Length: 280
Image (cartoon, rainbow, N blue to C red; front, top):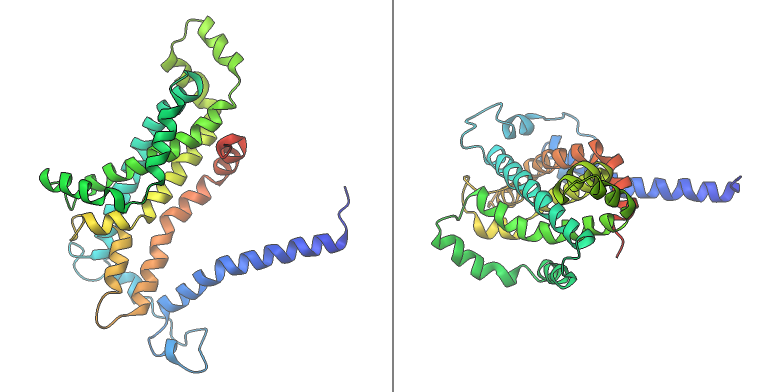
Protein backbone atom coordinates (compact mmCIF):
# COMPACT_ATOMS: atom_id res chain seq x y z
CA UNK A 1 0.00 0.00 0.00
CA UNK A 2 1.34 3.40 -1.00
CA UNK A 3 1.88 5.68 1.99
CA UNK A 4 1.08 9.40 1.63
CA UNK A 5 4.11 11.70 1.49
CA UNK A 6 3.24 13.59 4.68
CA UNK A 7 3.02 10.33 6.65
CA UNK A 8 6.42 9.26 5.36
CA UNK A 9 7.89 12.62 6.37
CA UNK A 10 6.38 12.36 9.87
CA UNK A 11 7.81 8.86 10.31
CA UNK A 12 11.31 9.96 9.27
CA UNK A 13 11.02 13.04 11.52
CA UNK A 14 9.99 10.89 14.49
CA UNK A 15 12.90 8.50 13.84
CA UNK A 16 15.33 11.43 13.59
CA UNK A 17 14.08 12.93 16.87
CA UNK A 18 14.28 9.56 18.62
CA UNK A 19 17.82 8.96 17.32
CA UNK A 20 18.93 12.43 18.41
CA UNK A 21 17.44 12.10 21.91
CA UNK A 22 19.05 8.66 22.31
CA UNK A 23 22.48 9.35 20.85
CA UNK A 24 23.11 12.96 21.87
CA UNK A 25 23.87 12.17 25.56
CA UNK A 26 26.27 9.39 24.50
CA UNK A 27 28.01 11.70 22.01
CA UNK A 28 28.37 14.39 24.68
CA UNK A 29 29.69 11.79 27.15
CA UNK A 30 32.36 10.76 24.63
CA UNK A 31 33.33 14.38 23.95
CA UNK A 32 33.71 14.93 27.71
CA UNK A 33 35.89 11.84 28.00
CA UNK A 34 38.48 13.11 25.49
CA UNK A 35 38.31 16.84 26.28
CA UNK A 36 40.69 18.79 28.47
CA UNK A 37 39.07 20.18 31.65
CA UNK A 38 39.48 23.74 30.34
CA UNK A 39 37.50 22.87 27.18
CA UNK A 40 34.47 21.94 29.31
CA UNK A 41 34.29 25.35 31.03
CA UNK A 42 35.11 27.55 28.02
CA UNK A 43 32.43 30.12 27.09
CA UNK A 44 31.14 29.74 24.44
CA UNK A 45 31.36 25.97 24.81
CA UNK A 46 33.91 24.22 22.60
CA UNK A 47 32.03 21.18 21.21
CA UNK A 48 35.03 19.66 19.44
CA UNK A 49 38.14 19.40 21.66
CA UNK A 50 41.17 21.17 20.17
CA UNK A 51 43.50 18.43 21.44
CA UNK A 52 41.67 15.12 22.06
CA UNK A 53 43.10 13.27 25.06
CA UNK A 54 42.63 9.48 25.16
CA UNK A 55 44.93 8.95 28.13
CA UNK A 56 41.97 8.43 30.48
CA UNK A 57 40.96 5.30 28.54
CA UNK A 58 44.51 3.95 28.74
CA UNK A 59 44.63 4.53 32.47
CA UNK A 60 41.22 2.93 33.08
CA UNK A 61 42.08 -0.12 30.97
CA UNK A 62 45.33 -0.66 32.85
CA UNK A 63 47.64 0.24 29.97
CA UNK A 64 49.50 2.49 32.40
CA UNK A 65 49.96 1.89 36.12
CA UNK A 66 49.24 -1.05 38.42
CA UNK A 67 46.29 -3.13 37.25
CA UNK A 68 45.86 -4.98 40.58
CA UNK A 69 44.63 -1.79 42.27
CA UNK A 70 42.69 -0.56 39.22
CA UNK A 71 39.12 0.20 40.44
CA UNK A 72 37.66 0.13 36.91
CA UNK A 73 39.07 -3.29 35.94
CA UNK A 74 38.12 -4.78 39.31
CA UNK A 75 34.63 -3.31 39.01
CA UNK A 76 34.34 -4.65 35.45
CA UNK A 77 35.39 -8.14 36.58
CA UNK A 78 32.95 -8.15 39.50
CA UNK A 79 30.10 -6.84 37.33
CA UNK A 80 30.70 -9.58 34.76
CA UNK A 81 30.82 -12.29 37.44
CA UNK A 82 27.66 -11.04 39.16
CA UNK A 83 25.63 -10.33 36.01
CA UNK A 84 26.63 -13.44 34.03
CA UNK A 85 26.39 -15.76 37.06
CA UNK A 86 22.99 -14.46 38.12
CA UNK A 87 21.68 -14.59 34.55
CA UNK A 88 22.74 -18.21 34.01
CA UNK A 89 21.22 -19.40 37.28
CA UNK A 90 18.06 -17.35 36.78
CA UNK A 91 17.46 -18.61 33.23
CA UNK A 92 17.86 -22.27 34.19
CA UNK A 93 15.56 -21.99 37.22
CA UNK A 94 13.01 -19.69 35.57
CA UNK A 95 12.79 -21.89 32.44
CA UNK A 96 11.88 -24.93 34.57
CA UNK A 97 9.47 -22.83 36.66
CA UNK A 98 7.81 -21.23 33.64
CA UNK A 99 7.32 -24.63 31.97
CA UNK A 100 5.74 -25.96 35.16
CA UNK A 101 3.38 -23.00 35.42
CA UNK A 102 2.46 -23.01 31.73
CA UNK A 103 2.28 -26.73 30.89
CA UNK A 104 2.17 -28.76 34.10
CA UNK A 105 -0.56 -26.96 36.07
CA UNK A 106 1.71 -25.66 38.81
CA UNK A 107 -0.24 -23.42 41.26
CA UNK A 108 -0.66 -19.99 39.66
CA UNK A 109 -0.81 -18.46 43.15
CA UNK A 110 2.86 -19.35 43.54
CA UNK A 111 3.69 -17.39 40.38
CA UNK A 112 1.82 -14.33 41.65
CA UNK A 113 3.60 -14.67 44.99
CA UNK A 114 6.94 -14.65 43.15
CA UNK A 115 5.89 -11.57 41.19
CA UNK A 116 4.84 -9.87 44.43
CA UNK A 117 8.33 -10.34 45.87
CA UNK A 118 9.79 -8.90 42.66
CA UNK A 119 7.62 -5.78 42.93
CA UNK A 120 8.31 -5.04 46.59
CA UNK A 121 10.76 -2.19 47.32
CA UNK A 122 14.37 -3.42 47.67
CA UNK A 123 14.73 -1.64 51.01
CA UNK A 124 12.34 -4.26 52.45
CA UNK A 125 14.92 -7.02 52.16
CA UNK A 126 18.08 -5.12 53.02
CA UNK A 127 18.27 -5.68 56.77
CA UNK A 128 17.50 -9.43 56.83
CA UNK A 129 19.75 -10.08 53.83
CA UNK A 130 22.59 -8.07 55.33
CA UNK A 131 22.26 -9.92 58.63
CA UNK A 132 22.29 -13.33 56.95
CA UNK A 133 25.25 -12.57 54.67
CA UNK A 134 27.15 -11.00 57.55
CA UNK A 135 26.66 -14.10 59.73
CA UNK A 136 27.81 -16.31 56.84
CA UNK A 137 30.80 -14.00 56.17
CA UNK A 138 29.68 -13.56 52.56
CA UNK A 139 29.65 -9.77 52.40
CA UNK A 140 31.84 -8.02 49.85
CA UNK A 141 31.94 -10.86 47.32
CA UNK A 142 30.42 -11.18 43.82
CA UNK A 143 28.83 -14.46 44.96
CA UNK A 144 26.61 -12.50 47.36
CA UNK A 145 25.38 -10.33 44.51
CA UNK A 146 24.68 -13.41 42.37
CA UNK A 147 22.37 -14.74 45.11
CA UNK A 148 20.62 -11.40 45.58
CA UNK A 149 20.22 -10.77 41.85
CA UNK A 150 18.73 -14.24 41.35
CA UNK A 151 15.97 -13.33 43.79
CA UNK A 152 15.05 -10.44 41.47
CA UNK A 153 15.64 -12.10 38.10
CA UNK A 154 13.93 -15.46 38.59
CA UNK A 155 10.37 -14.05 39.08
CA UNK A 156 10.87 -11.60 36.21
CA UNK A 157 12.23 -14.21 33.78
CA UNK A 158 9.68 -16.85 34.84
CA UNK A 159 6.82 -14.46 34.10
CA UNK A 160 8.34 -13.54 30.75
CA UNK A 161 8.91 -17.16 29.70
CA UNK A 162 5.55 -18.42 30.97
CA UNK A 163 3.73 -16.06 28.64
CA UNK A 164 5.74 -17.49 25.75
CA UNK A 165 5.24 -21.12 26.78
CA UNK A 166 1.48 -20.47 27.02
CA UNK A 167 1.48 -19.79 23.27
CA UNK A 168 3.31 -23.07 22.54
CA UNK A 169 1.09 -25.52 20.54
CA UNK A 170 -0.02 -28.34 22.85
CA UNK A 171 -0.28 -30.79 19.92
CA UNK A 172 3.49 -30.90 19.44
CA UNK A 173 4.04 -31.64 23.11
CA UNK A 174 1.33 -34.33 23.09
CA UNK A 175 2.92 -35.98 20.04
CA UNK A 176 6.25 -36.14 21.89
CA UNK A 177 4.52 -37.69 24.93
CA UNK A 178 2.96 -40.37 22.73
CA UNK A 179 6.47 -41.20 21.52
CA UNK A 180 7.44 -41.80 25.15
CA UNK A 181 9.33 -38.59 25.90
CA UNK A 182 9.39 -37.40 29.50
CA UNK A 183 8.96 -33.85 30.75
CA UNK A 184 12.63 -32.91 30.76
CA UNK A 185 13.19 -34.41 27.31
CA UNK A 186 10.16 -32.58 25.92
CA UNK A 187 11.44 -29.35 27.42
CA UNK A 188 15.01 -29.87 26.15
CA UNK A 189 14.37 -31.30 22.67
CA UNK A 190 10.96 -29.92 21.70
CA UNK A 191 10.09 -26.75 23.59
CA UNK A 192 13.43 -24.99 24.00
CA UNK A 193 14.47 -25.10 20.31
CA UNK A 194 11.18 -23.36 19.43
CA UNK A 195 11.24 -21.00 22.40
CA UNK A 196 14.93 -20.08 21.97
CA UNK A 197 14.22 -16.42 21.02
CA UNK A 198 12.17 -15.94 24.19
CA UNK A 199 14.88 -17.55 26.34
CA UNK A 200 17.55 -15.36 24.75
CA UNK A 201 15.39 -12.26 25.24
CA UNK A 202 14.81 -13.15 28.91
CA UNK A 203 18.53 -13.78 29.39
CA UNK A 204 19.48 -10.48 27.78
CA UNK A 205 16.98 -8.44 29.80
CA UNK A 206 18.08 -10.24 32.98
CA UNK A 207 21.73 -9.46 32.23
CA UNK A 208 20.92 -5.76 31.70
CA UNK A 209 18.98 -5.59 35.00
CA UNK A 210 21.88 -7.20 36.89
CA UNK A 211 24.50 -5.11 35.07
CA UNK A 212 22.84 -1.81 36.05
CA UNK A 213 21.91 -2.75 39.61
CA UNK A 214 23.33 -0.29 42.13
CA UNK A 215 21.42 -0.40 45.42
CA UNK A 216 22.36 -3.88 46.66
CA UNK A 217 25.88 -3.62 45.24
CA UNK A 218 26.45 -0.41 47.19
CA UNK A 219 25.23 -1.90 50.47
CA UNK A 220 26.82 -5.35 50.26
CA UNK A 221 30.27 -4.41 48.93
CA UNK A 222 32.92 -2.13 50.40
CA UNK A 223 36.21 -2.57 48.52
CA UNK A 224 37.78 -3.80 45.28
CA UNK A 225 37.00 -7.46 46.06
CA UNK A 226 33.27 -6.95 45.53
CA UNK A 227 32.48 -3.52 44.10
CA UNK A 228 30.75 -3.54 40.72
CA UNK A 229 30.99 -0.92 37.98
CA UNK A 230 27.98 1.20 39.08
CA UNK A 231 29.51 1.50 42.56
CA UNK A 232 32.97 2.18 41.10
CA UNK A 233 31.52 4.99 38.97
CA UNK A 234 29.95 6.52 42.07
CA UNK A 235 33.33 6.34 43.79
CA UNK A 236 34.95 8.23 40.90
CA UNK A 237 32.42 11.03 41.44
CA UNK A 238 32.78 11.09 45.24
CA UNK A 239 36.22 12.71 45.51
CA UNK A 240 36.80 16.29 46.60
CA UNK A 241 38.32 17.11 43.19
CA UNK A 242 36.18 15.45 40.51
CA UNK A 243 37.57 14.74 37.03
CA UNK A 244 34.44 14.70 34.88
CA UNK A 245 36.46 13.35 31.95
CA UNK A 246 37.31 10.17 33.89
CA UNK A 247 33.68 9.70 34.90
CA UNK A 248 32.62 10.14 31.27
CA UNK A 249 35.26 7.64 30.08
CA UNK A 250 34.07 5.09 32.66
CA UNK A 251 30.50 5.63 31.46
CA UNK A 252 31.49 5.03 27.84
CA UNK A 253 33.43 1.84 28.68
CA UNK A 254 30.63 0.56 30.94
CA UNK A 255 28.11 0.76 28.09
CA UNK A 256 30.18 -1.41 25.73
CA UNK A 257 29.35 -4.92 27.13
CA UNK A 258 25.53 -4.48 27.30
CA UNK A 259 25.51 -2.67 23.94
CA UNK A 260 27.50 -5.46 22.29
CA UNK A 261 25.15 -8.09 23.72
CA UNK A 262 22.08 -6.12 22.62
CA UNK A 263 23.43 -5.78 19.06
CA UNK A 264 24.45 -9.44 18.94
CA UNK A 265 21.05 -10.76 20.04
CA UNK A 266 18.72 -8.02 18.77
CA UNK A 267 17.00 -10.39 16.34
CA UNK A 268 16.21 -12.84 19.15
CA UNK A 269 15.04 -10.00 21.41
CA UNK A 270 12.50 -8.70 18.90
CA UNK A 271 11.17 -12.11 17.93
CA UNK A 272 11.16 -13.34 21.54
CA UNK A 273 9.12 -10.43 22.84
CA UNK A 274 6.75 -10.34 19.88
CA UNK A 275 6.10 -14.10 20.17
CA UNK A 276 4.26 -13.62 23.45
CA UNK A 277 6.93 -12.72 25.96
CA UNK A 278 5.18 -9.53 27.10
CA UNK A 279 1.62 -10.77 27.13
CA UNK A 280 -0.31 -10.74 30.43
